Image 1 (tube, rainbow, N blue to C red):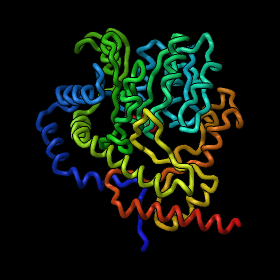
Image 2: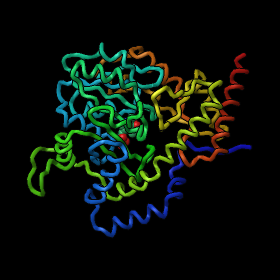
Image 3: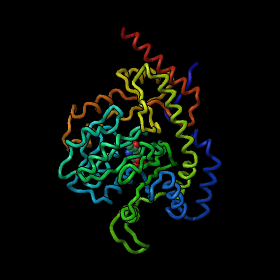
Image 4: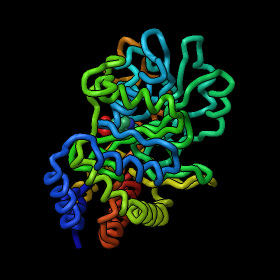
Length: 373
Ligand SMILES: *Cc1c(COP(=O)(O)O)cnc(C)c1O
């Protein structure tokens, strides 16, 4: 039996939520209040409550969340920020956009920043570390806390892929000075456009961030400090609020699918195992295999769509050229870029689809192995 399993299927989720979403949007349209306002404040409170932090500040997208977090800490020209070489572009782009220099760090087997390699990258210019909780698994924070403390560095979590993930029972977004989240349609909690937010506990930073996301305006007419227009639309915030009601159930489903993949594929490829103290949300389920390109092609012929997150490491991007890195600088990142393959994983996937993906991967790897013998 053949099936088509797309890598994502956003309309499927919409069909499940349609009446709730349309009613929510209608309330906003009727209210006449389309940007920020009460609706967005309500979302911020609920999200702060969910994450267990004092403040949540809604912004226009996850990249702005990172840019504003760096800005509010005074990071800019002449400063350095340590970023894993294996991440989405925005983790480094945000650093460059405030005028600072991204300093890349290789990753460990968990695909996240390798804390053992951080210390040697620290200079007198280093101001912060951005651990990315890639694929929805928390970075190894304990050693990062120790390094940050020892050198007086800020920790800005890039939690764009990891909402709901935990590290020793603490929610991500609470593991540093600020947590940066995205509500992009492809994230675990998503809206129908762009959106994002920052989590934090410091009142002073929160008050400044509130200014910075809205032109630095204290009131209608008075600008205290030049800022951005990085506000969240009320429509997107009402959609995020509805999603938040479903988030725990979606996370459980992500985790169940990850369990099925792990059990079915452990003997065929390297699968993400969950270490003690970790609670992953499996934004992506990433296999490691040295037959990646063949496997991906064969799976496509069987109707299973896969993606690569990410095929070009940050230090080898054309945009990084002036930073002076070269191939070979980060061996783990570069190896994983050739081995990583993300399987479809979303709460609306049926068990049949999950089993079909597993059987297809098994079949392709077996055929490949036989052909190699
Ligand atoms: C999605 C993502 C971002 C950026 O979020 P946007 O809302 O798309 O700006 C940043 N970092 C990581 C790791 C991401 O996956």
